[in-house]
Amino acid sequence: MTDRYRQKSARPGADRHSPKRALGRLLASGLALTTVALTTALVAGGAASATGKHGASSVENGGTATIDMNTAPTSLDPQYGFTVESAEADWLAYTPLLTYAHKNGGAGTVIIPGLAKSLPTVSSNGLTYTFTLRSGLKFSNGEPVVASDFTFAIERLLKLNFGGDSFFLTSIKGAETYFKGKASTISGISTDNATGKITVQLSAPYGAFENIIAIPAAAPVPPTTPLTVQSQPPPGVGAYVIKDVVPTVSFELVKSPNFASFHISGIPVGHLNTIKVTIVSNSTTEAEQVLDNQVDNFDTWDTVPSSLLATIESQAADRFAYEPAEATDYFFMNQSKAPFNNKLAREAVNYAVNRDAFVRLASGTITPDCYLLPPGIVGHPTAPCPYGSNMNGSNLSKAKSLIKEAHLVGTPVTVWGETTSPVEQLVEYYGGVLKSIGFKVSYKFVTGSTYFPTISTKTSDPQTGWSAWEETFPNPINFYILLNGKDIEPVGNRDRSYVDDPHIQSELSTLGPVTATKLSTVTRQWTALTEYEAKQADELIVGYPDDPKFMSDQIDFKTAIYSEIYGNDWSTWELLKS
Image 1 (cartoon, rainbow, N blue to C red):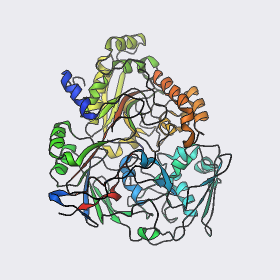
Image 2: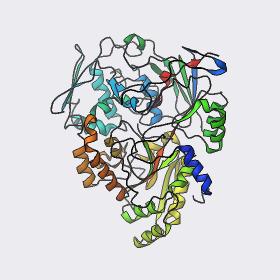
Image 3: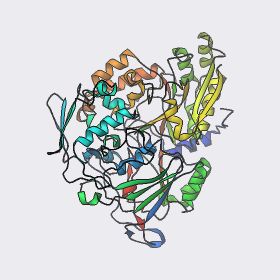
Image 4: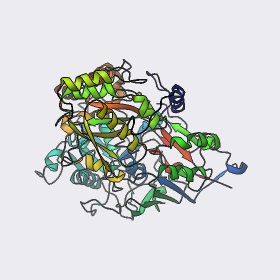
């Protein structure tokens, strides 16, 4: 849903390889790599009952589950954290006016009422959305929830420079004026605490508006919450309460004392009493502990080490699977500075890279491709890659000639990456390719929890580096935040290639207002735009990652929901009786 630190079954419109087959194809080909040398009707959420460990045939409420997570959330403050690790927990503690169905696969992308009584009424011109807050709601601390708390949440996320603030700035009337300090409140939001009515005026029709209202950052928090990032998250309305946060070390979710009493249809109240999350620096240790049933879950967003994959598949086949999601792994190339302000340099990189190398280094969990939009998103092209497939080989000679033509041989390039596996290995391979075509390469590695905030700040001004994007919502406009010139910001920037292309901007202004129910009518336009963007070589697309669902034998694997947007849905976990 966001930047993902670190997914897939077959999808319509594209030739897909399962992770296992992708890895097997590589190993069979004898591709020898070293890190430096290559330097929706709703689908049922699962079985109603399960046969558990040791022949058990039932589950039980209560108890504690444990999770190892390779990378800490940037923050668990809902109006600031904007990585998948943040959202995975915040989704269960902060319910917005609208939210997503707790269902497997594509059914989990269906919007349902959250704290609102129903889906909003929308004016005929698409500019006015009207919600009504449920009555009797209380925050986890017992304080009543009122309609104006929604306004406060939106204003607070703008004040904190939430990573997805551009969604709100460009859609809600008066949001940008408030953000710039020229108004004391957002003029486009009006509320009535007596009736619970919330009215939002848009500055222009925005087809994905209901989706952005479903982001946890838009969930109400008490108006006394400070306008600074809180290491101990504020009270919310959700099945769980986030407590005892030790940044970069651990945190807990405990069952909310009052959420069940609200009887919100479609949102689980949670089976477990406590969920304990520990940040571990080594993904091998993380996988081994789950394999040995010492820990209950290997986090969705981490990559299973290739050295353990075969063992896990043979010894834990009934509690391990790869789940579909919609995400794109890529390397950004900063066009605001040399050498990637020269299109020839960006073309050279796209010609040079062998994407199969990335697949192998990621344990076969990436399906290689060259397009920004993944297969499950409207507009994913099926045309051949414009710079060759690069799946079983690369065109180094062509790449080298382009670097010479551009007079860029010997140009210094610093490649950025985070200190987690397999990202370090992917970055070193990528840097090795840049070196082989004529650049003078150095590396800049940053710890996981601070990596995205660092590369999203203008003062860091990175030339190129690894990045990844998980769908925030199932609309192509969500992925184009990565290439939208209007989204370039000094802090919290997501357009890290600093692309400000007039053609892209024109198309986004036309396609952005199209509502979710009519997206299929503009598939051709989205596809054409994505093919155009690939030809511009604005970034190096690596491919589409697979997400592991890997648990101990204490969790009912069959009924545990995997959300296409939020990953493992902890609120659906149940302990098996021994």
